[in-house]
Length: 180
Ligand SMILES: [Zn+2]
Image (cartoon, rainbow, N blue to C red; front, side, top):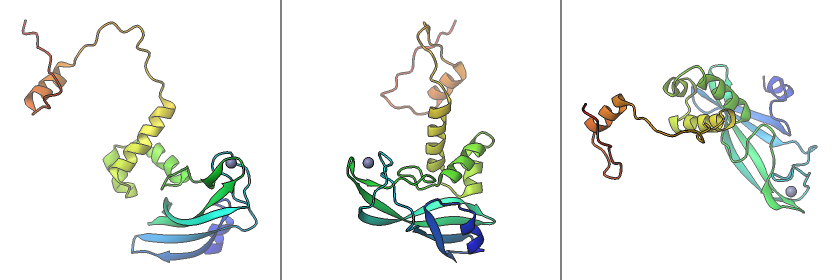
């Protein structure tokens, strides 16, 4: 099983060295850096042989059958002659992310189909994490509206009634309603 996963090459630049259960529903997969592959600078992507330090990070991966999959990844902080010290570039792990690119792509596909609450129950990911993934997806895919020709803003009366019926912050003024 372990060899089959490793051969599939899911985690370029790393090798799977151990799998063990964390609980009835979670599995941990421990990776190690492949010594045949030089780490890349996280800024300029140049190969770097000098290692400043190593940090072990837990990353969520897409589920493995009926188990939530967690990766334990030893990330290297490398010394680049151009950029200085940076965390290595890992092609399947976005910078500073605790989710793999594969899991993010899966969540983004679900975001177009289901409400956040359902995706949270399906994946076990926190609602705030899903909101962050969705905001990045929208920033990438949706063009900001052209407001250059806008002359008036019109308020939805249903939303206005809702705002009046609920306690409001004194810093948010409610405009006068027209009773004609
Ligand atoms: Zn660099």
